Length: 294
Image 1 (cartoon, rainbow, N blue to C red):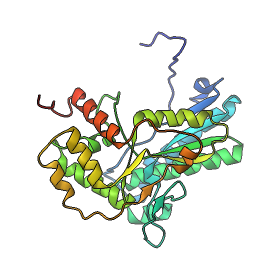
Image 2 (cartoon, rainbow, N blue to C red):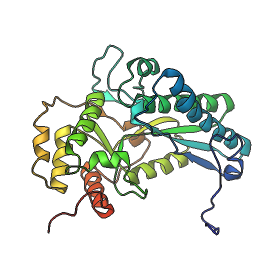
Image 3 (cartoon, helix red, strand yellow):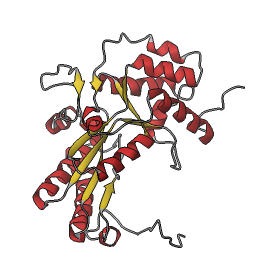
Image 4 (cartoon, rainbow, N blue to C red):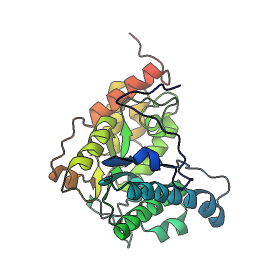
């Protein structure tokens, strides 16, 4: 239905078809690769099924895109969207780290063995990112990775994104929400949040900054559970939501550090309170949450 325009062009392509993105990236200076298979629960979870039906297509799709970038001879940098799921707050001995940064990668063998909740998605992101950086090293392609924490704020999708549901369901699913956030906190030591506008700005910033290299953790603020729920209660008053935090005895949370990105000169526009407030507002407008009483 798109009739064309000077500022936006649409191309039909498939990550699974080698050469499919040649036309789209031709003449481009930079490419943002933001696509990922988001499958947290897989009915058939044998190693062979996961490898052939989820991991291999995700990895091959990324490599097909990078091949098109290399073929173009014009693409100077690729910015790859990664995930906090590739990061762990514990060392090999299982001890908590005080500071979590880009160097704290989740061991791939541990994911295969443990098969914890969401392990297929974690594995997909880890192996796809690893393959992308290996291809870039072998072929002289400049690639930078943005490791995003839990993203909130306004959204344009046709359904409510998973991360938005996590941050905005005090009435429709408060127990489920608390369980999900608790799982994040138990894995990371705290809950890192970032506004979608800052995520987009970080991608552009890293595309344009000459000294950008490697991985950059994108986290505006790392919050203990209590602060996150207090912000939810403040922006969407509900009698039971504050009670949930009393169920946990919180220790000093790990710091999910965005120091590397900040040191490069990036500044965040939004803190945790902005993320929660704008997420709740978007969900009310979307109809996912009932309107606040006036």
